[in-house]
Each structure stands twice: as C-alpha cells, then as structure tokens.
Length: 561
Image (cartoon, rainbow, N blue to C red; front, side, top):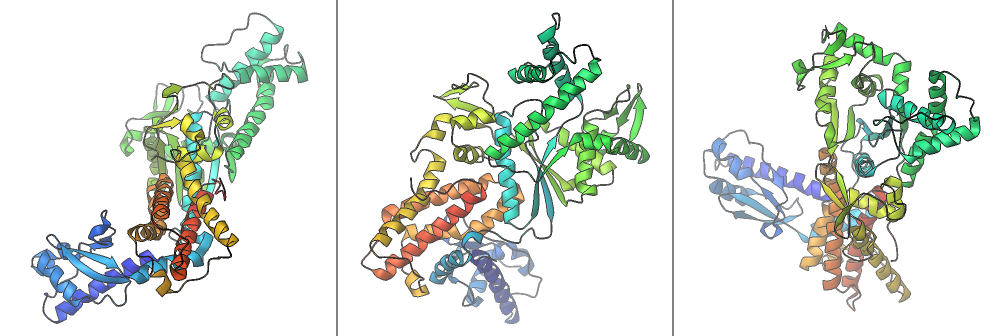
C-alpha cells in the first residue's frame, strides 16, 4: 500500500474511532456508522483530503451535519496519521491537511521502490486477455490500427502494472469472406499477367500489394497455375501471399514496439470443429430457429437489438460464428477471467451480439469487455491529409512511422480517451519544442539528468536525506509536485479500472509541467546544503516517476536532448 493509500486508510480508521468515542460519551446516539468517502479535493487549498462522513451520518445520528462534524473533529486523534489538522467547511464537509512527515514519506517511498513505484497487487490472481489491432491480413495496417495498437498495448501494460496476469493477442482472420476476396483478387491479378479479358470486380482488393504478390508468385511459379483449376490456383496464391502478409504485420508491429504473446488463427477454430460445435451448443440450449433455410440466433431475447443468422441457407456459417467460438475459447477453454477487445467504434452493435451469444452458451457475459475507439484524422498545416508526402500512397502504420518518431506516435495516440475523436498533428509530432507533449515530458527527464550531471561535475552528489531535511521542501511548487507524485499508484489503479491508459499519459504530462514550474521557481543548487539535498531528492523522485511511465509505455526516457 502506498503512502497516500495508507494515509487514507489511517484517516478512515481515525474518523470511525472518533465517532465510536463520541458515542461512548453519548455525544452521538448509538447507530451503525454509515459508509463514507475520503477523496482528494479538486482544489487543494481547501485541504489535501476531504470526507463526507458527517454529511452521510445526519439521518443515522439525527443531527445536523455541521454539528456531527464538530463532534468528530473534537474527538479525532490524528497522531497515528500523517495529517496535521482538520477544518470544517460549508454544511459539514471535513477537510484534512497533510503533515510534513507525509511529503518526506512519499519521497522515501519512491526512492525505496525505484522502478517498481506505481506498481501494485490490485489485480493479483486474475488473468486478462487483451486482444487488439487484429488487422485484416489481406492488406497493410491503417491509421486506426496505429491508434488501436498504442491503446491496446498501453492498456495491457497498465493492467500488468497493477498486478493482473496479462496476455496480448492478435486474432488473424485467415478464413471467411475476406480471404475469399483476397483469393479472387490475387487470382485475377495473376491471370492478367498471362491472359486478357480478366477484370477485377469493384469489391475486390485493388491495392498495389496485390499486384506485387501476383508478380512475385509468377516469377517463382511461371504460368504453372494458368491451366489448373481455379480452386487449386486460388489456394496456391493464398498459401503464398498470406504468410507474407502476416509476417509483415508482425514485423511492422514489432517496429511499433508491440510484441504479442500469441497470434491466434481463425482457421484453427474451423479445423478443430469449434465453429460447428458453437452452433450445436446454441441449438441444444434452445436459442436457435430455422427460417428461409437458415439457422438464426435468438439474440433479441438476450439483450441484442435483433436476431441474426448463424448459418446461411447454403450451410456456411456467418462471420459472427467463429467470433463467438473465439471468445468462448478465451473465456472457457483457456479460462481467462476477463477478455478485453479493443475495437473501432463502428463495432458498437457487435459487442451486445457477442455478449448475447456468450450468455446463451452459459458464460457470464460481463467477463467480456470492449474498449471502443473513435476515428483519427491526420492533420498537417491545419488540413486533413490522407496521403504520405514521401511515398504518395495512403498513410499506413508503416508510412506514418517513416514520417514521425515512434515515441511521438505511441504518446500521441494514447493522449486522449479511446472514445474521443482525435486529430493527430503531424507537424506537432516532429516539433522539438515544449509545444510537443512527448518532447515536453522527455525534456523534463533530460533536464533532471543534466542537473545531476552538472552538480556531479562540481563534486556534489545526491545523498539520503533525513525527514527533518526533507521538511525544508515547503514552497507551493514543491508541495504541489510531491502531491502529484504521491498519486501515481492510485492513478494506475483508476486507469486499469476504467480501461483508460490515456489517464497515465496525461498524468506524466502534468507531472512534467509541475516539474518545469518547480525548476523555474526553486533553484536546486544552494549554499543551504540540506535544502539542496532535499531538492535533489525531489528531482530524483520526479525522474523515477517519468522514467517508470515512459518505460511502461515503451517510450524512451532520454538523458540528454
């Protein structure tokens, strides 16, 4: 438990003890103490912690909240906490202020925990599978995948940091309609090399990558497959091109610093019989019916907007059946406690369908969660762009990473909540100034490294400080900065609970802002040696926190810039 969390726990116990003491003195009637909250107020000038204990006790104790607050404050003992005093505000809110010992304890905690500061065992014992990107393997990844990659990978990192056992997974759609379309596109491009009269359908894949695959296949095999059956030709082309595409996805994602624990192929679900088994299980459980020769799922009975087809009249399953089988595999076969899908916002209607199917299969649908992600617009010179200046082609993940630093891409795409629309400013991403958020944070880290190096050149090295020495940190800039540092463990837990890793990106940006503010107001080097060492301790704590977060999100923490 962190210093901040322990202080809240200690305060809660002190308030309960004060109420019980007042009851013993008959200052308050005997009644069960209602649940109350303790939180950090938005305006710290009113106090470092605030409690509504008196407000929620009015009915139980049959007294005005202000009177209850007066009684609690008269009977509370704060000596076992890191709090110095309590003030009553308004109709009965109680505001508490940290003692100097709190600030010293925070800095010592960060120093002792080092690279583990911010981590916790909140989710210990629970297994979570995070599936993200899962781009169609028939072509290159687009900008939406770039955002999904940063969000999914960062979310997995946050969940890991708070104690969950986390696995990252990419689901490869190597079966179904898109593979049939891929085969058609490849086949026609291959036949066009040798024969006239072959035209690509409007709904086929028209990209240069398909043409390149066909040419390369022809260079290896010549016209060997021109006179074979279409089935044999299509299979040979897909068997050649698909592994190349999948290897390309893996290579590009590794460049983006994303490494998956598993690449799960949809085809394994078909080959194992899992897809057919799902339909049979839904039928056995009474959740299907036949109509127009097709098998339908009674999704509307289980919270979805409408029923949908599981098996077409031609006997082929729809795309949703292997998806149901896949999620059943995650939660039942492999036994993950929770499955999290990072999906585009256009999948909002898809999730209730999956949940309905899981419920029909006897699975607790609350074990599936989805993080829905809005679209990204690329902006340059104030205008929306769709094509790369360098290549003249549509901007994919790869062309984006050729044009901007990977650090900037990972930071920017995780700067806003997933459900918010986002304008990605390409000019800002390469700007080396404080206007660029990732540069601004990295510069704070580099600035601290420079302070330490400069002082070391003068024979001054940081040392461990006593509580009395750390008590020299009394300026508003110092106190505000330490308060921010103290909240990291709770911020991490909140980000994990909300599936919102952007909360931590914003936190580290705010921390950098407060550090720059401190640096400009408080000279670190001083003739007052205890004060200088205390400020060095604060600098080291900030350096640790920034480094921990940037490392967590696979962003570099430079020592000089």
